[in-house]
Length: 93
Image 1: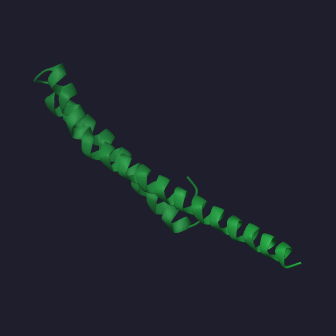
Image 2 (image 1 turned 90 degrees about the vertical axis):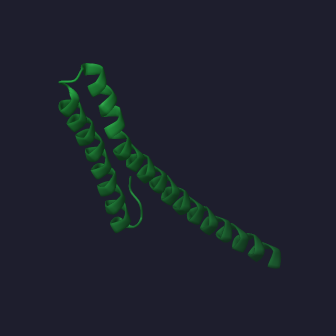
């Protein structure tokens, strides 16, 4: 996603990618570590080990949505102020 602040956009996208990598690597590590015990045990381990990375992905998506919502509210506020100024200038006539 593109935010007005390039630094903030880069940071959020970088952390989002990092959390996805943590989720995938954690799942793969758990699978290969526990495959000798049994397939279903390895599958359960994958799910458990992927949870921290997926939680991070969810957290970054919430932050991204919040920043986008804030930018949209700022844009709407600017437009409303502009409309108010135009209406005030018409009422002065």
